[in-house]
Amino acid sequence: MVTGADGKATDFAVGVDAVIDLILSLREGCKVMFIGNGGSAAISSHMAVDFWKNGRIRAVAFNDSSLLTCVGNDCGYDNIFEKPIEMFADGGDILFAISSSGRSENILRGVRAARTKDCKVVTLSGFDNHNPLTSMGDYNFYVPSHAYGPVEVIHHSICHCILDAVIRGRGGRGAAACNG
Image (cartoon, rainbow, N blue to C red; front, side, top):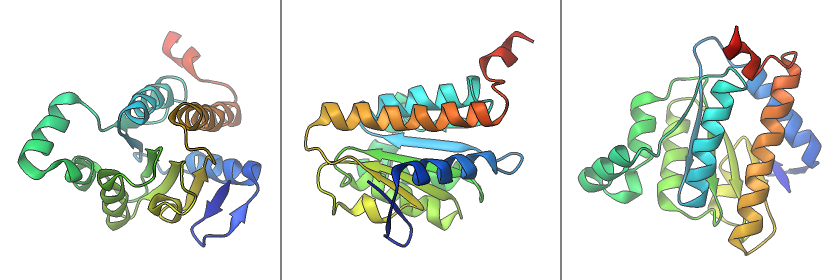
């Protein structure tokens, strides 16, 4: 299921197309940011690399171990994404917030921080369709499962689907750009 900022459900393909358009319209110098815990952190890292290498889009995942342990120790684990987003996000950036439960306080705070910086937000969640994350994005992708495996695999697939379409929309000039 996909909902917009207004909470109204839309067709999956329409939601994916809207996010593709959002990414293709990024202003010069803007970036895509990814946040997630556990398996969602792995998806975040993977997609950040694929977005910049294959999609030629500035992208970053805020899950470096030193960053997480520093901010967690100094500011509390609930703030591990909020603080770097406050520091590094710019208006016009896009945040992908990935959480299987949609209830992780650090993810929710990261989204709120992105909003204060005038960023667009794409959420991916699962488990309970009334989790807080499902109403916080400009586009909210919800996977109707209570099992981590299917939720994480589908989140990863959605991200790849979006990136692959972005690459096609740019004439397929992804990783080939690294080779000249």
